[in-house]
Amino acid sequence: MSKVNRFDVITIFPDYLAPLKLSLIGKAAEAGLIEIGVHDLRAQTTDVHGSVDDTPYGGGAGMVMSPEPWGKAIDLVAELSDAPVHELIVLTPAGEKLTQKIAEELTKSRHLIFACGRYEGIDARVTAYYQSQPNFKVREVSIGDYVLGGGEVATLVIMEAIIRLIPGVIGNPLSLEEESHSLEDENSTLVEYPTYTKPAQWRGLNVPEVLLSGNHGAIAAFRREQSQIRTTKLTRNPEK
Ligand code: 6GU
Image 1 (cartoon, helix red, strand yellow):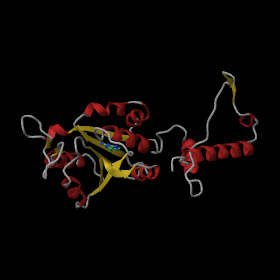
Image 2: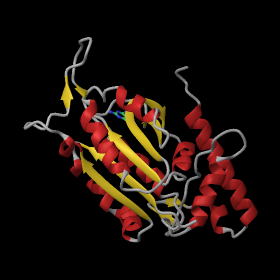
Image 3: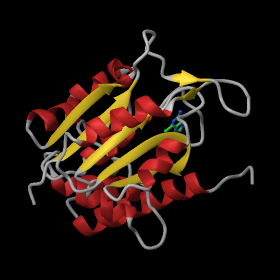
Image 4: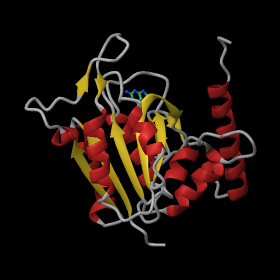
């Protein structure tokens, strides 16, 4: 039950991952609920310039990240966990799109290694090699249909989505339970209902009366209806 989840990030910009020290994730690490390592890919280069990229075979624009520093860095980082299987997450806009379901699946992994690509991506043999290793699982993941300069911000997004699901990380697990129920509603995915706090009136706007009524059945019905309205607005695309 109390297995510690370990997260290792490999990047040429370790400072980009500084937010991991803050807030929910920083506290979870301080409390020993998770372990986090951030590693500079350039530490695995051998030439004086610390080169991590080269021109693409077959020609074309941009540069491609060389396989050797990646292989060295991933092998080294794998030794930091005694997990039987290391899950390698390769960040790329060409990957499967992150969903809540994927985040939930990743909480079950004892060791996650995030490979942050830059430029036109990492030499394709790196994923091919680790896919062939029995002690590795490889997933190529994207966070949406747009292109970022590199995988660092995507790693922050994915780690936050995973870590808040780990037992003990969020103060009130009831809010997680409610959230997952609303996400699992019937066959459609419902988004959350609008929420309100004190004061009951603010700049001429009142909190919906039913929420002040103490009638739990009516409140649940109201919230469900509001979720459905919001969901319909998101799903309906007048352009199509
Ligand atoms: Cl994971 N990487 C990059 N470079 N761009 C992205 C992305 C990842 N996900 C969406 N856009």
